[in-house]
Image 1 (cartoon, rainbow, N blue to C red):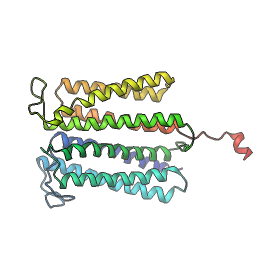
Image 2: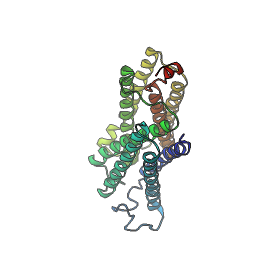
Image 3: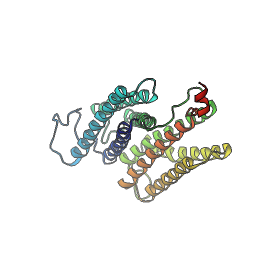
Image 4: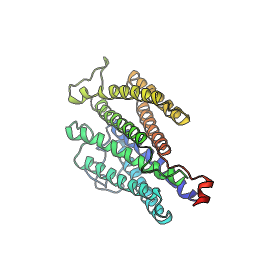
Length: 298
């Protein structure tokens, strides 16, 4: 029914994942100050001379602008073509709100100069907040694409126990993501020396251990919960494979001293895990389809 719109929604989701990965390159290379303390211009220009950190940061701003336009087009398209009370309308609007908040957080980070070598508490707080909002954006875009592609609507009153478990899992995932953002910031600002220790003592270096500890505890609890509740199937197998890949990339990052390509692969896997989790949750919470006999009786 909405095949073109559905394809555009999936394309918008995929492009936003690309934007997230480009943003990770900016952070990992310390290029956040490449355009100076000016936004949305770069060094006061719409198109500056592109080289070094300026090229990296400007590329991120350019793709972020394209993503903002794509989400805006998606919201307008859905509101114009999809009738009420289709749930894709609400999901699309939420994606529009989330990407505006994303842009405002990015602007604040630039204007307050929480970039490059800044190791302030404000920057430490802004990084996980930015990351959590990014995952909320991915949630809204994933639900929009899923519902437009023929996914069953979510039931508002069914599966209360399953809903609580899914919310708990989502919260745990966001905690892992937030601690991962702090660890990535610490790795960028205070790289480890040859002995595996940070060259400078800072509160961020003490927080570095949070991410692996939280991740291991949550994953062990999740595995126990799935086994106890007897949940399986292809979706769980796919998520489990992504979890395994995530653990592998995490171990390799430590062993190989944080190469950029592995950092990007680690974040890309996290994005894929989250999208798969949202789709799985939407299917578990879907309202049952009416049977032919039930339709005939109405």
